[in-house]
Length: 380
Image (cartoon, rainbow, N blue to C red; front, top):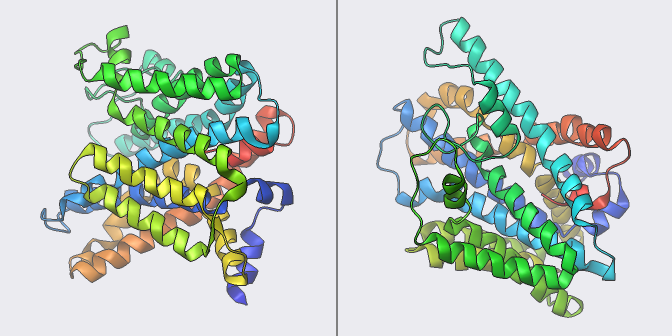
């Protein structure tokens, strides 16, 4: 009873939003964010010498699998929204505006906070390597333009924002495709993504700090193929959406989790992509069977998914202190490490959800000067 009461309070109040969301897909979003959290937590433990450098190789791939899953989900949702119910898709301009206002505000806020935290740590002597970003770096980071930062890496001021470079480029492609209509545009973008990945096999990273060749290199990486995976699965769902097999929600979750674990353990990039495709397909091509347990699970999944973007952008502010506070605990062995990893995920989820409710959604409402649309709230 207590658990159901808590979920009822956490659950978004808009009934139309609940109907619009695919609960298993929301669960997958939360799991993907958790994979990023766990990998980054393990990195912090390693830097502090709290755990030996002998962890299984797959643990260093959890974040990569999580990001790839986010990209596949993004590809799916963009096509799913544009094709569902025979609705007329938005114009490319309106689509880009909605996507920008959905993604940018919280990212900008986190970028400013990470700079502020670095400056404060430098002032009190806790960080000796802090360097105030230049105006050009702020401009490039806020414009989602790939460039090499002061550390030589191709990433914006807030390192986690590198994934948003790919997201925004995908949105540009998708907006261009909408000019041909939702279905034709989806196929065009699918083809374009495949050609970009194929071209990328012959492109090496240039040493430039900022250039067109650098951008071409970034946007032809194999990870772009995950957007194509999502588009393909969305087209399949649109074709067979009224004949989805019904199975228990718990089974859908088990298949998705097992598939993502397989992606981290996969011996090749192709096998990892296939496993990720299985995880996404399980969440959108299988329909949860109605039951009281399934309803509670679906409610949690929606809450988990809603918090995933904030969870991704805010977890870096939490894990450093958490790793320092629990370093002595994880030194006791694997069970303690697993327990602390789960606790970290719960903590990051709670803060991510609070950020979604108190920051992300109010910002979306403010910048739109209206109540956010269902598409803006549902999409990642």
